[in-house]
Length: 428
Ligand code: ACO
Image (cartoon, rainbow, N blue to C red; front, side, top):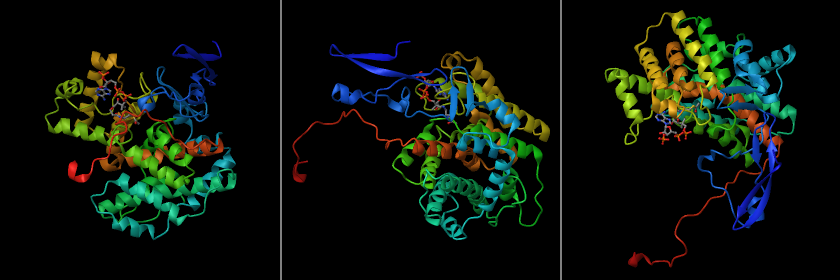
C-alpha cells in the first residue's frame, strides 16, 4: 500500500501520511490538514471514522469479534487471571509477577478506607438519587480528600493514586447501595480477596455473618474483567479529554462515570432489565416489542442489541452468556425475565432487520441477568460496570498523559446565522 493518501480540493492535491498500527489498521494522519488547506476540516459526527489517539492498551476488531488487552485474548484472561491482575496488566502494561501481584493486593487493601467525612456528603443525597450520580460526585469529592497533584511522570505517585482509587471505589459503591437501603455504612474486610470484599461490603447484614458464594465471586470477577477496558468508547474518551486539560485522575474518572451513566452506553444494562420487566408486565409478547424496535416511527430500541464497533457477536457477550447460564443453573433459578431474554435473542438473531444491520446482543444484554440473580438492585448495575471499567479509565488516562497528548479541542462546521444587526428589546 502507498504510504500517503491524496486529497484533491478544487483541483489542488494534498498528500497526507498513512500510519499503520501493529494489527495493520491504517490511519490517514490529517494533523496537518487545516494548515495545508488553509482552513478545511473533516466532519465526522459521533467520531465514527476518527481515531482520537494512538493507543497500546486494547485491541478490538469489531468485524471479527476480537478483543485483547495488551495483546492477551479476552477469552484467556477471563479464564486464567483475576480482576486485579487484569487491572495491573492494563495500567502498567504487563501481567504482574507473583510478588508484584501480592504487593498490589496489599497496597489496595491498605487504601480501602475513606475519610469518615465522606459519609456526611453521602447523607446529604436524597434517597431517590441515582447511584451513578452519587458515585460520580463521591469520586470527584475524593480529590478534595486527596488534594496532592499526581505527577503522572512519577511511577511512585501514579502507583499510589492507582491503589487509592481501586481501594476506595468499592467502599463508595457499597456505601451508596447501603445508604439507599437504609443499612449501616461499614468498612470491608482486608483479610479477603478484592471481589469477595466487594460482595461482603454490599450485602453483609448488620445482624448476621456474611456467607460467601463462590458462584457469585467467579461471576462477578468475570464480569469485571470483561468490562475492564474497551478502547476509545464514550466514557473512556471522556476521561482522556477531561484529563487532556490536565484535570486530576479522580476528577477525570468522575466525568467518565457520568458518561457511562447514559442508557446508550453503560446505562444499557439497567435499561435492558427494565425493558425485560416491562415486556413481562405487558404479557410477555416479545414479537410486539420486536415490531416496535423495527418501526422507524417508534423511538423504542431493543436495549442490549447493537454496538458501535461490533458488527459481529460481541466476544464478551459470548463469555457472559455462558456465565449467565451457569449462574442460573447452579443456583437453580427459573426466571421469566430470562425466558423473555432468550426469546428476544433468538428472534433478533433470525430477523432480517437485525441480521442486515448486524445487530447482535451486546455484553449488557446478559450482565443484568447475572446481577439480578446475585440480588444486586437494578439501579446498581451500571455502578458495577463502573468498578469494572476503572482500570481501563486509569490506564487510558496514564497513557494519554505520558504521551503528552495536547488538550482535546475538536473543531466544528458553523451552520448558524451570519452577522446580523442587533435588535433593540422593544423592537424584537
Ligand atoms: N434496536 C433497534 N434498531 C437498532 C438498534 C436497536 N438496539 N441499534 C441500532 N439499530 C438500528 C438503527 O435504527 C439504524 O437503523 P437504520 O440504518 O435503518 O437507520 C441502524 O441499526 C444503525 O444504528 P446506529 O444507531 O446508527 O448505530 P450506532 O453505532 O450509532 O449505535 C448503539 C450503536 C448506540 C449501541 C445502538 O445500537 C443502540 O442504541 N443500542 C441499544 C442500546 C445499547 O444496548 N447500548 C449498549 C452498548 S454496549 C456498551 O456501551 C457497553
